[in-house]
Image (tube, rainbow, N blue to C red; front, side, top):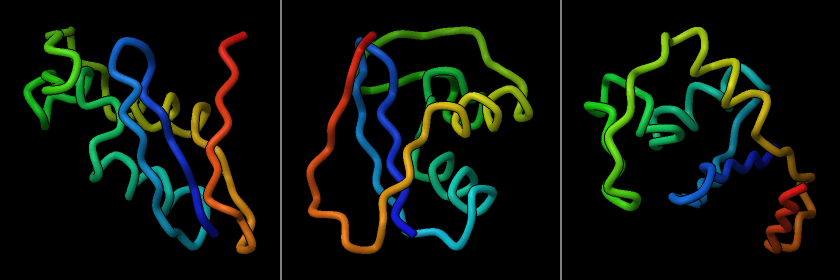
Length: 85
């Protein structure tokens, strides 16, 4: 299954990965840099947004990534759609 993640404003870093299930997707998204601005492993620094923020626990990071990721079907056409409320 294809999963997507878009970091919150101001970063808007977009990540697409292929994973077997939700847990695998969260792990792969975090390794690919999802929420790096809040991840101590990356020094809580996002090169794109240039912001330094306080770190979140790994459990909170995983929960946030899972809540914000999207799942695409195998026949996904490659178009990302984002709605900000």
